[in-house]
Image (cartoon, rainbow, N blue to C red; front, side, top):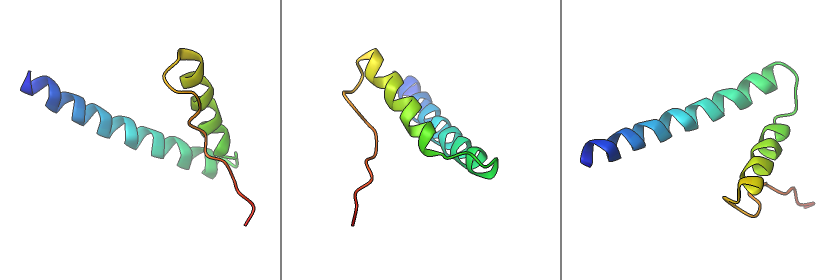
Length: 60
């Protein structure tokens, strides 16, 4: 059980790193990285994981 929890933590680290790299690649390729967030927000909402995880811009 302990081994599985350690692997889960490492897996989440890799997932986080992959997300960060994905955003960087989008930006470097000239795409708006907000689309990345919108895409995953829609996926999570459709699967029922969350209602909405998107970041909203506020006018300051």
